[in-house]
Length: 169
Image (tube, rainbow, N blue to C red):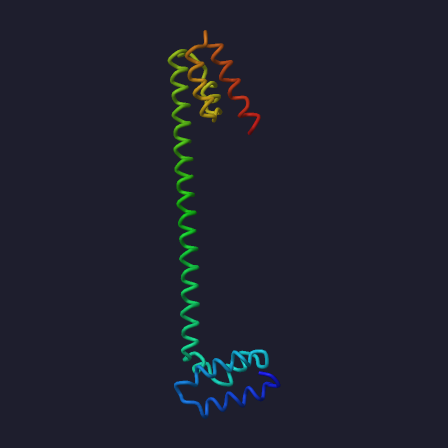
């Protein structure tokens, strides 16, 4: 639109509305509005020709349908991503709960092993056992408590195992 200005665009829009067949007006106005954008603000052009005429354009319908499909696809992809993230979080939480349950079972086994070997063991040892969180360490302690020569050795072993947890907390 060389040598055009806003008044020429407005005149062209009036001519389209007055002379173009009704079935072609909306498409012609959409095309004119696209080319006139550098010369005339889109909102001013819309007020000039009317929103309804621009929206009834087949081109506008096509663009809106394509945009709606793009937005729908983006929404579906985001929804799938969120569902996958939620699924992973649920799996991680379930694994964490299972590990916690297994840790508690190992602690319980260690307590029972200690009390079977040394029924007079002080309760403070149960606290020490609860401070051990490493599954490998708990397994090692179960075996070690079965093999220690006396209760004093068991106490020393459990106090030592509880120390890193106290210092790390």
